[in-house]
Image 1 (cartoon, helix red, strand yellow):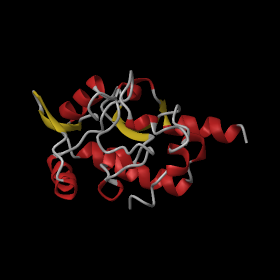
Image 2: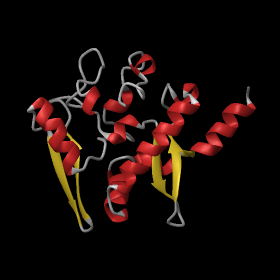
Image 3: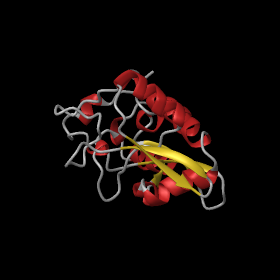
Image 4: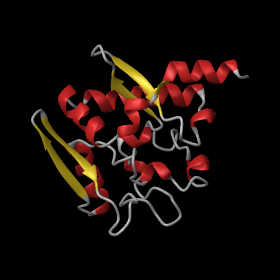
Length: 169
């Protein structure tokens, strides 16, 4: 599955900016099962537990002294491609709660791959993004959005983005 959703041809030239924390990008949200699978593969304990009033989630720490994901190589490749977190697999698409409590899909328009996504990628990414969101209760997921993944708050709705993109063709 991870290889099917790989956007590497766009990631490497952009230096995998989404794998580096900054003003709006942070660690993917992980559940206990993902942490266990990644740890079992790498034997690296590079996870930070975040406890909220609604529950727990995990983050991946950065490489020491940098803002780079602990699993990002110097060549900007993912060392855990075959156990990549769900949240990374679906990027630049995320599922999020809208203002009415429903679920919508958003896209990070700053991702260099955003304008090149195939309909097959979009379909699979939406399925994975929804699965990622539904693993957590609403309070836990919203805590992550509010405190970690700030780009989602101002993101374009996926349907609106695709409409604009196709109207330019």
